[in-house]
Length: 112
Image (cartoon, rainbow, N blue to C red):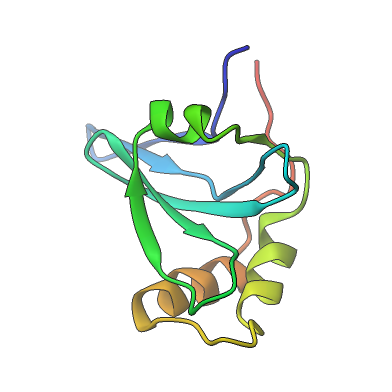
């Protein structure tokens, strides 16, 4: 099974950029994470866990190996929930989450 993450192609003054649409992922243990951005070939992920939330860098192969698949849960709602995490949220994670929580990203991925 192939995993698809939302990518947006943006043209700006003859330059083309690829932007990541935030995506909620879930594994077989019902652990959730939020893909918030890309960094080179890696995906920047915030995993919901017991400790303070932080941004980690993972390859798509790492995500697949950990059993994660794309969820249809709203990234905006997930970000709002993650910001309320009892153990706290690191500054870098907080910046990403606040941007997503107040964004106009679509709640659904659309594949043509």
